[in-house]
Image 1 (cartoon, helix red, strand yellow):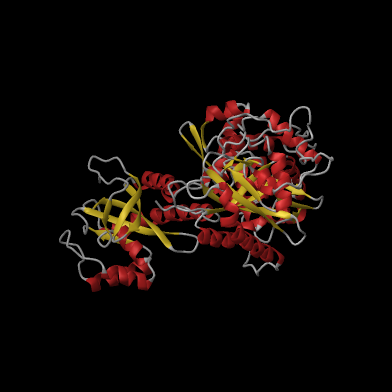
Image 2 (cartoon, one colour):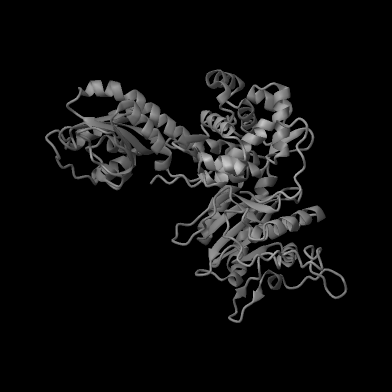
Length: 599
């Protein structure tokens, strides 16, 4: 569920109805946490079961959804839509490094957020590893009144924006339309009271003028212990907006949930327009809200000044823009021929137009979108008009640009994916192909640790579970991981090993192991035959991240007595490499703007 639209205009005549209906299915799946029973999607959208099935079939063909039994599940490929918006905005790429440095300097979480209607949406996170740390995800949407950045953005609202805010508050007093935040406890509408519906604009003094009190007084009322006590998130929003306008910064004293405090400063473009806000987020166990300005604000302002200089400077030379439109009109025609009526071509076309945007392609005319996608101008135009009507694109009449609402399409739900979760469905497909067990492992000290595994069903099977550790040197995945280390790191790693013979076949010579690792690096795979355990043979290949670093290995394990090593290599290596390539493709898409945990 998204925050309610209280005055949504009717769709224009050129809008594509099937695209609008199809996107309602994707939104319902996204706001439902990324996994929903197909029957629940039918009920949530009010569409016929056959229509929902066709939409899911199309999304599966695009790599955006998997259908697992009765459930539809968002797939990592969907993140390419949000990536297109984030790349086009340039905010994570250009300002993210400064946010990371600020987080390191303060040892606190730092966020970049942008305005999205009467809400605030996160576009970058630099979090700290703590038991209590920032839990918001890139793409999460918060009400403007519940957080520090919202008051900064609301300072530029006009009367219509304030009216829409009041209507949304009245329609959704508990913030049920914002699943990223806990429900509002008091249900306060925050509209300034029925007798004074315009009170949000600014607090007034006795002479009818604008009151510029000490900014801290407007952010929070003082508690008896010298700390701060927040009023309801809506009841003092107007005064917080005015205080933010006066002070140039905004405070969040537990407006989202108890214990969470933050301070935010706007980042302005060379024309003085706020493009985002930088928030430093802490917990009251570390800093009280009243202490944040003194402890954080000087360094925060330095970082904001650095960011504004970055935005004012010419953009650095870019490499060839990373292609986002990985599919083309010809691909859609082939899909339509193969799937027939199960392929909703208008949905594929609409989502394809979103992927035309990206780095160096922040705003595009119709002609450029048509050229990038291979769509006819008339087809691309109708898709763009529909997406503009739905709020995913904005237009000045000539140029179209993606809006933060694109992140509504599953980005937050998928941004918490781990590498094992990305790998699991691909390992399952691999096992169906080869009828032997498949696993993923990462390097942990001098061991490998299994982080994902799909066993096969045989009378005699290999019993290994997730979390199992083995020495790296006598295993196929261990050798792939060791071979992927930088040379100096690999040498240091090998110097710490004690090469114990586990079977009569185990390589225990340091010189021989070094030579084998060199060969593995050249060949791109490792085959280990009965070195860890008698009768056990395995073959492994690396999984590389966006920077080509080996971050994991995947393998197939089998019994050595069934075939010769050469036969197993010929049978297993091609499907194993194909599975690793699919995992890498998803990892590269998912990891473009999100840190992917490897375990």
